[in-house]
Amino acid sequence: MVPVQDNYVRIFDTTLRDGEQSPGATMTSPEKMEVARALAKLGVDIIEAGFPIASPDDFEAVSQIAKEIGNAPGPSGMPPIICGLARAKKADIDSAWGAVQHAARPRIHTFIATSPIHMQHKLKMDPEEVVQQLIDMVTYARSLCEDIEFSPEDAGRSDPEFLYVALGEAIKAGATTLNIPDTVGYTTPDEFGALIAGIIEHTPGIENAIVSTHCHNDLGMATANTLAGIRAGARQAEVTINGIGERAGNTSLEEVVMSLQTRKPVFQLETGIDTTQIMRVSRMVSNFTGITVQPNKAVVGANAFAHEAGIHQDGMLKHNETYEIMRPEMVGIKSTLVLGKHSGRHALRSRLAELGYDLNDEDLRKIFDRFKHLADKKKTITDADLDALMSDEFDQPCEIYCLEGLQVACGTMGLPTATVRMSGPDGELFVEAAVGTGPVHAAYTAIDKVIGMPAKLLEFNINAVTEGIDALGEVTVRIQRSNGKENGVVNPQHDTVKQRTFGGHGADTDIIVASAKAYLAALNKMLVAYGYTNEAQMESAEEPVPTA
Ligand code: KIV
Ligand code: ZN
Image (cartoon, rainbow, N blue to C red; front, side, top):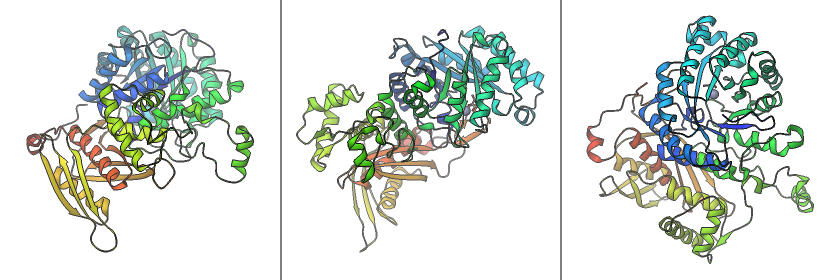
C-alpha cells in the first residue's frame, strides 16, 4: 500500500463507475479502455473501473483495464491502482476480485448504507446487523486483496457517533481506505469538513487508514465540500471528469485539482496530476458520453478562459493576471493557431504528439487526409479542431453501419429531403431517401429506414468547435431504443435496472453531415449493446436480459 504522506492528496477517479451511472453516460468497452488510458496518463492514483457484477460486459471491461492499464507504469513510475465496486455481498466481492486481480495494484471497494433512512427503508436492517455485515464482508474482501476501501453509504446523513463505531470496525476487519460519501449531496462545506474532522478525531485505528471524500453536487457544493474535507485531513478525493454522475453529478476532478494547484499557498498540498492533460480527457469523456460541458463550467467550459472585448481584453493585454487566475496552457489549452493548409505530415504528427496522441503510420495517413480536407475549407486548424477530428476518426469506428454519403435538399421552397448511402454489417451498400420536418430529421429518418431499429432522440446538441464562419461543427446526441424493453444497467446503489441510453458524436464543417455521423455512432453502440452485429442477428435475436 502507498504510505500515508501528509501533503499528498490521492485522486480517485470514478468516471467509469459513478460517472457511468449518470443518465446517458453509457460507454462501449473500447471507449472505457480509451478513457482509462487517458486517466492513467493524467496521473490519477486510482481508477474505479466499474461495478463488475453488473453484467458480463462490465466484468470484462474492468478485467481488461486491470490487465492493460493496471500493469503499465503511469507518470509516477507505478501503474494506477485499479478498483472494482462491490456491495457488501459475497457474490459482488468475488466478482470485483475476479476482475481487478489482474492489476499489479488491485483494490476492492465495498459499501453498505449507514444512515437511518437507508438502513430502515432500503436495507431493512438494524444498525447492529449493518455493522456485522460490514465486518463480515470487509474481512472476506481482505482475505482476497490487500487494498480494501470501505464506504458507509449516505454518511452525510448518518449519525456521526454510529459512523465512528462502524468505521472503527471496518479498520479492524482490514479496510485500508475509509471513504465518506455525501451520497445525496446534502451537506454544506462546514458540515462536511466537521464530519471528516470528527471521523479523524474519534475513529479507533484511523491512523492506519486513508480518509477519503466522495461528494455529490445536488446543491452545487460538491467541490466546496470536497475541499473542506481535504482541509480537515482527508487525503483521497473521489471525483469524475467534468463532474458527471448521478443526478447533478459528482465532484469534478478538474475543479478540485486546479483549486489545490491555483491556491497552493492556502492548501499546501500536492497531487500527482499532469494538469496539461485535463482538457483532452474532458473532451474525450464529453464526446464518448454525449454529455456536453456547459460553456460556463469552471476550468473546462468553452468560456472558462474566454475574454470578451472592452475592458477585460485591454486589462489582459497589459497583464494576464488582471482577469485570469490560471493560464489556459496549464489545463492543456493552446490558444495559438497551430496548423494550416501548408502544414505537412511531420508538423501534424508532432502537434498531435504534443496533444498526447501517439499515432502509427496508418493512423497518421488517415488523419492527415482528414486534416488536408479540413484545411482546404478552413484557414487555420487549432488544437480543438484536431481533438474533434481525432475523436471523429478513431473514437467511434463504424462498428456496424458506416455513412458513405449524404445529400440533403432543404430551405423554404419544398419538403426537406435527405438521401443516405451507408455500408452495412456484411459490407453491402444501402441507399434510402426520406423527407422530414428539417434536414436533420430527414437524414435521421433515412438512416432509420436502413437500420430498421427505431430510436428515440433524447438529446441533440450542436456546437462550433472554434470561432469563425468556417468552424467545424460538433454534434452530440443521446438516444434510446424506442420500443426497447429494459436492457439492463444495474445501479449498485438502488438495485434498479435502467434502460440504457447511448451517446454519439460527429464533427464536420457540414453540420448535417456531423449530425448524421453522431446519430449513426449512437445507433452503432445501441446495436452492439443489443447484440446485433449482422443482418441475420437483427432479424432473429432476442433482447438480452440483465444479469444482476
Ligand atoms: O455516492 C455514493 O454513496 C457512492 C458509493 C457507492 C460510494 O457512490
Ligand atoms: Zn456516488
